[in-house]
Image 1 (cartoon, rainbow, N blue to C red):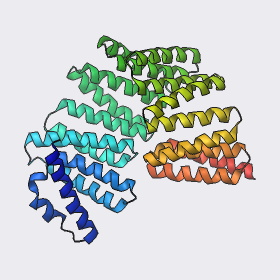
Image 2: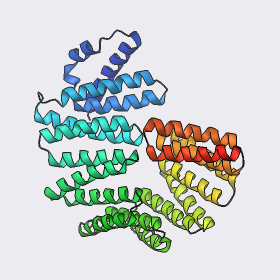
Image 3: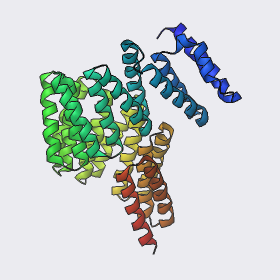
Image 4: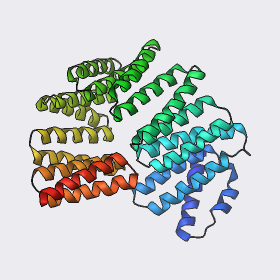
Length: 384
């Protein structure tokens, strides 16, 4: 994006911000006067500005820009526009949706990907169609709606196979494996991960190969075959170190920690979690940092060191809140409830479970909701 063009977008955004402050409702007039700036790249800049406003607690202004972005997206993606503009709009909105997914804005991500799917289907862009279907699958996966996610992954897989996109095929297979793993259908998950692994190896895609090995490790961990899980995670870790994928290295270390935790080797698990945490901090990967802190909390909880577990859970919670990762926030709240429950501080446990329940209900994450309700039942029973 050229600097001059970017400045034009930012000036237009400032004009629109003044409209919010004045409550004049003249946004359409301003957009008409700056028609040359109403183009797909503006949508990306608006999404970034909305995020900055939300970070500063200006939710009304952020929502204004999100709604305007969606309206402009519909305008730029409509059938009246040239195909090139529609294509660029869909490509931009696909990326915007990824950012919304990362910040747990699942409803917005779903809305925008449903729209990109329609555009790609109308302009007969099969690759874009497959990407939109895969993205919708990931969103439903994140919401715990695994059966629905599987339907989208299957559609994405079918298209990738039809257009002979081997990389897209491997990604869809890996995603299917992850969804079946979440459903605890581990044998089915292993089949899909093995298929994706074969394709990535055939393509000499080392990163994809490492990810599939990592996922196979997690599936075997679910089956209770912990030694085999460790073998796959070690293979994944070796590749990630060779290709200098530091982010992936941190994930493999964290998963090795999970396997040793499952084996009851908590001190060894803690060693791996600490290594994972160190890398995440070096990379300034705050999501990875939050995940590692949460894992450390669980390991110390297993060791009966509940106060120490609480310290890690609270750090994890703070990070997830800052990242607006509401799924992670809900899990951290639930973990805090568990720690206070084991300390016999039932009122405090109930408070955290209630917060996690409210959050999961807002997200429409049924699995998390069920977990929080079950935990609340135990806490009230313990309270007498």
